[in-house]
Image (cartoon, rainbow, N blue to C red; front, side, top):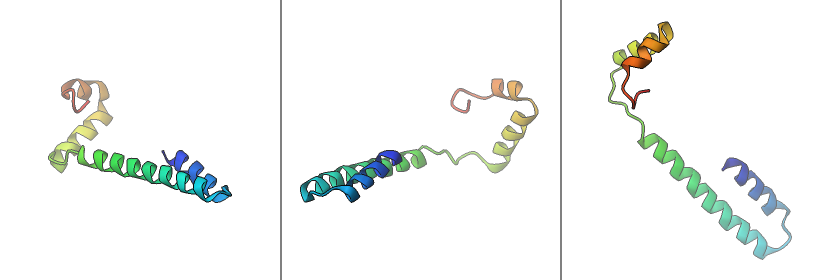
Length: 78
């Protein structure tokens, strides 16, 4: 999405026609709206209900013995 935004920006800068520039700007606005929407969806999906100590224990367990800890986790955590 960011690459597409960069390409559209280049096209806007290099375009000679006002109508073409407006069309590119409309596409760029749609692209930014999609990027914002994706950003909000990923933040909304975060689960911060796990306490710090529980999360720390899971992480250190994964570092010490990844396979055993992985088996103990439920599907959502895996």
